[in-house]
Image (cartoon, rainbow, N blue to C red; front, side, top):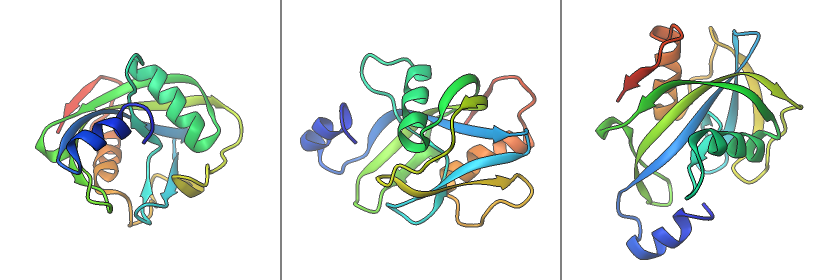
Length: 158
């Protein structure tokens, strides 16, 4: 939570704020999805995070994926924009957000996945047909959109 969000939180406390963000669906062989076991809530989630001031969404995606997984994104396709009340979330520390997140499908990357030890302590590829039950609900919805609706055309979701 460095950069943009830390000083903002000092001003507004834990009140709900709109946070522009990115999410990465990193796919191996188009049928295995990389998830990270988050340290802040002991649930599996997609790599991603907040867009910093001056960054494009693609730059934020590449930075967040590198920070959280050690992977270098080579090719990413925008999949869907998630916004609205359905993107409201409260972190275990009480911070409230409403996401405005652009999800990307990442099929090409370089490197070996390695957890950062700060946001997650484990990374694992899962078959899309046997995902774990304890996935962050907002991320589960993103995965479901990919599985149920994504056909290569951009989606607008809530």
